[in-house]
Length: 432
Ligand SMILES: Cc1cc2nc3c(=O)[nH]c(=O)nc-3n(C[C@H](O)[C@H](O)[C@H](O)COP(=O)(O)OP(=O)(O)OC[C@H]3O[C@@H](n4cnc5c(N)ncnc54)[C@H](O)[C@@H]3O)c2cc1C
Image 1: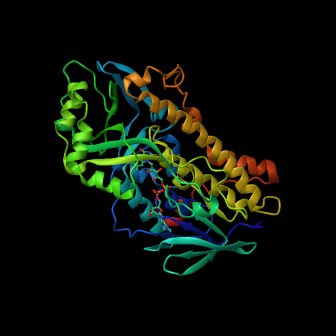
Image 2: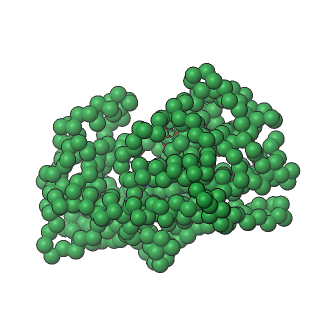
Image 3: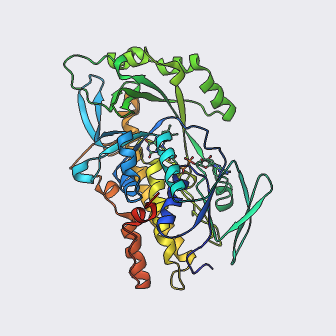
């Protein structure tokens, strides 16, 4: 049973959760090594929305000031009906109430900045290695293997290896991602190609909720001149080759995107008539079923981020919940002691994280329901779809100080008060 802070942490996956975890652990004085399958030269496409709960964490880690000039800041997404009247505004950020506007930023920019900081902090990352399996786990540590046959060891092994996680096979054998039946089809379109109707107020981002469901348009570069346009459709599940074939068949994809075009207002028609075909993309929505727990029987193998709880995208909280996982786990590990053994610490962490993820999933379902085709929406009862209420109603999500919650719990359990380093980054990066 580990009852001192770990000195060797191994992380599988240098995606958003893995890199952020390494930086958060470094802030807590805990050394780690990351192992990543892909080479850093492989680029990632698309953009993400980051809401205040994610931005507060990135700010503490010194990343917000690097990211915000490279993204598009905004506060709400307007919901419009088929007649293009605004019916609601959903807050994805709000500087006054939640401390930050929402930020839409390309995934590649986020990865580049996380990698740059990891490099500045001299965090070792081994690229081009594929984790295979856990060899053994006992009182002394965990030993694990890569597909090339090499074996390594650590005090704790953390799987931040995404929705199709291999580490999860050890923590939760027999659990596989489940297809939701829906696929998002998107493209990136110049703002100049969109035909806005005269006399109708149109701030972007916007979701037009019509007969076919919702059509979303969201700016994704700094000056808002490039807009993500997309909708979701019911589509039968495919195997990996089937999804690849659908993506490669641009004509077929365009036809699917344009299905029911006559039912949309002119603005959406203008998007669908001007699709830059090479930017067409699909995103089949898979979810990870609720796991019994996110750690192994001997507690030394832990999963987080999409590996533990990939959730549908509608609340824009997928990556954000991963940031919360890593930030809280990093706050907990320096407190390991006889009074706070690893098993007790990870049980608390898993419970507090699962509760929050459950609430985010509930919110996501409500938001998803507002995007259903009109006929399906009309069958739902009040409360099953999202309707905005009082200002600040999303404070539970955006204003939570998850690190403070962890430190308060540690104090109650151990009677030891700990604070987290305030000027850590300035000291670390001095002269670099
Ligand atoms: C199109 C799209 C749009 C999205 N939009 C949003 C949004 O607006 N807001 C939001 O919050 N979230 C959004 N998400 C969700 C968000 O991208 C994920 O929640 C987030 O990327 C999860 O991060 P992760 O680090 O846990 O997993 P990943 O980003 O999947 O990273 C996992 C890493 O592990 C590596 N890996 C996998 N297997 C192995 C192995 N065996 N050995 C070694 N390395 C391995 C992978 O190569 C990868 O680098 C979106 C997702 C998609 C697909």
